Image (cartoon, rainbow, N blue to C red; front, side, top):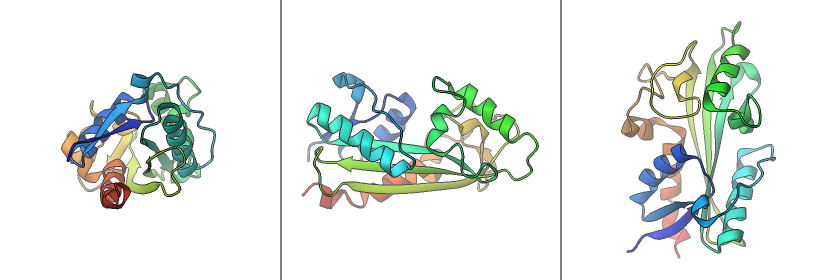
Length: 199
């Protein structure tokens, strides 16, 4: 069976690499929205599911192709679930990863409760009017470190401690991260439903 071309509703290079590797084996050929000249969709919803649906519909409308959107973020218990859907903009609208990490460490400076969870929601649409999109979720429980560790990954990975390995997400190999992460879990849930999606 030939691969199904799907437009990824993101310009995040890290997401494209991770999702491309994970879903390539499932027969999806992911292409970034920038390849089609599609601008980023606004992310102004209050939940990961709503943001992912909005981004996928935006790309499907613009390209006429199936679309995949990932909305994910870090939820920190002591911060009431923040940064949540604002994870990429925690330190401001134009924040870089280092800015967001510094802002998180500042917010937790006097806090002993470092529990956190990554959440990933994937939405896959056949078309903009798909009445039954595939929606998959994945979670990764951990803790926030007091200082960054590791050089891999992206986003909050250097600050996120995986308790099972004792390593930060940025210290894990790509294969180890895929096996443990929220995105890996969401991809496996999505793969389980792909048979019905292709009908």
